[in-house]
Image (cartoon, rainbow, N blue to C red; front, side):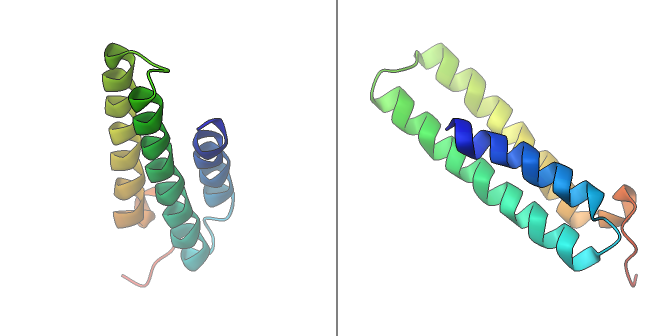
Length: 87
């Protein structure tokens, strides 16, 4: 879970640094989304194995969902992040 959640951050930083290239921007954000989904699966395992409480699970799932919404917003609105598109 640590690896996948940190990978979301690392990929998003790389995404922003390469925003001059629309295809790379989209590709890296897709990677972010996949890592965020993986993090959610690890949260489910942690809860199922009683490593975390239900309260912690619910809180982290809400935060994970918000991160997913932000990633999706960036994918759908690249021009708002300095990406030059053909629109």
